[in-house]
Image 1 (cartoon, rainbow, N blue to C red):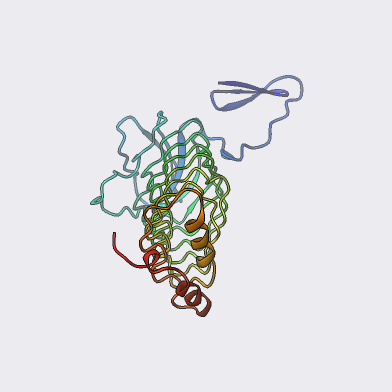
Image 2 (cartoon, helix red, strand yellow):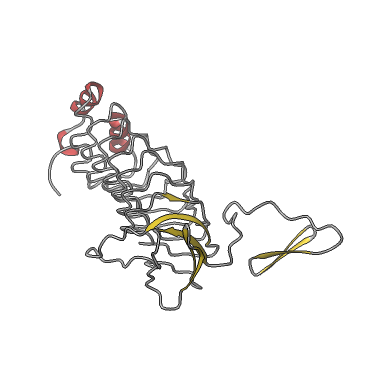
Length: 291
């Protein structure tokens, strides 16, 4: 693709100067390292050579100390590039950090870093064309920081951060088309707060969205008018001090009925005085029953 910008020319992902006094553009916030298309730069443990699941992916070592690799995969579907989408897939503890990527045009990122248990930090990269982030960071138990991804075209966000047990907070991701937020933060035991995400009115299921988030201190009032399933959404969020009653009142009284809501608030707020008081005001069928 060719793009003109003042006295510079972008050709196939690279900026070229021309004219008497070329002025380079500002760094691309999604690709500040100016990596070539469909390339991701990753830091690994010393001595490790990356293992990839795509036979036509290429890898080039950028540095040996620290051990940094550029991995290029000329495909719009990166699903399972590093990890196979199998429940019995063993943990992979060699990947330490994602330093940057050029993922413009990549639509599938499901299971990309699943069970990368030593991954601590990820740089911002382009997710604007992505439609699926299912299990993208699932079981990344050392992950402590994530950037403000733009998930404008994502429809499937099942299990995205499930069991990211070191994640304390998250930025306000941008959504626009998402339908499924099931188990999005389930098992994030260190998560203290979650923002009120904009543009999630398209969501139909928040089943177990924050289940077992035992450090969560409040429940934001999510704008989810089309949700029909909230099973176990805030189950075992025992340290919630406020927000559960307001969330219940919203879910129970909106125009589109929540048909499946068993255990939505089970044990929610039981460790706090105010949370327990709110829980007592929520009907039994929203906090007990089985499914």
